[in-house]
Amino acid sequence: MVTGYVYDSLFLEHDLPGHPENHRRLERVLRVLEQYHLLERLVPIPAVPLSQERLERVHSADYIARVGRICQQGGGHLDMDTYVRPGSYDAALLAAGGLVEATRAVLDGEVDNAFGLLRPPGHHAVRTRGMGFCLFNNVAIAARYALAERGLERVMIVDFDVHHGNGTQDEFEDDPAVLYLSTHQYPHYPGTGFWNETGRGEGEGSIVNVPLGGGVGDRGMARIFREIVEPVAWRFQPQLMLVSAGYDAHWDDPLAYMLLSVSGYTDIARMLYELAAEVCAGRLVFTLEGGYHLDALAYSVLNTFAILLGDEKWETVDPLGPSPHAERSVDEIIARVKQVHRLRE
Ligand SMILES: [Zn+2]
Image (cartoon, rainbow, N blue to C red; front, side, top):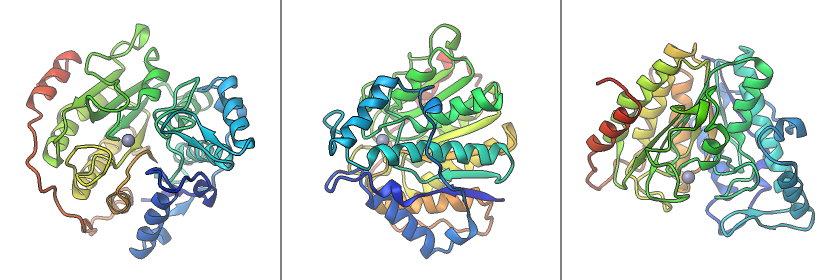
């Protein structure tokens, strides 16, 4: 397989020392990819800054101008969690533009699949404001590009970040062209993503939320992918699969209470890779969202790239090992989501 990646040193300019979403996340990812000689096997996809037209498909002109103004004035905060520094506007435009380029490269057949190693992340950002460490909603912008400029009719977004992607759900909840499926801890930040949020109007049924109590680990998540994500994808028949890849459901991540391991994240990547091969000719684009334990993040991304490359001899590298805690059952939530979305046994 030919696998592309997007990275630019400008993504490091969005930075606040001491904040969990800082430049060291991407630095660690790059270092581990180099150490295991994977970077040299990947095709770099140059990021280009997003045009205003593409940005305004997802964000209001007022909000965009506000972010630009705060940067020019030396930085500040959009909310308690979400900082803006002088370089943040340009970094955010390049991140979103980079993911559009990755999507373009996959749709053009230049690469088979791709991963955007981007910052700032995007899935919490809504039309009129940024929140939850996110400035512009990268994955929503990429999906809108595929629909508006490439003529796609069905795009699926899978979001396995431990937090619910409220911004992405907001953007597409009345749009049947985009199926948004999220697994996340619940109740937890940002508070949305209960199973009864299923879309509105014409989009009814196109939002699939799998809210999970803390303590779900590798086995539970693998079952959720087999019993919910796969049948939902088969039914929807996407032409492209975008993945909001957050690694903050790792058992040692400081921001949540889920029990995934690096191996569990590798299994998720493998399931998505196989699923995309079956339902959408392998068109698969990952984008980085959260993940705040640097090694859990970096090694999960490393193994994911090996999967995307179709590397059959690859042995999962997991220096952190399995979760030391007991896993919670997912029987009840699987039954509930299957019932709500009328998925057969
Ligand atoms: Zn997150």
